[in-house]
Image: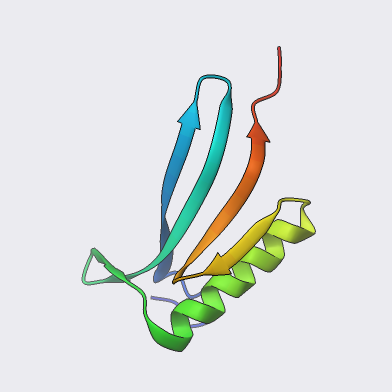
Length: 81
């Protein structure tokens, strides 16, 4: 683990989709310990969530934080070819 990069922090992405569209994406923070992903908790989890949400918003993606997760909000439609 690199303390500056915090490469021990990760996320599990839960995607709700239907043909042609993604309805929502929930991101649940995890921490890698001993080669295993464990749920992240407390202040570490909240900081990670809010930092990720800020970065998503900076790219124009609607993101909300609550209940220990971040949700990317619809519409997240696939481009039409």
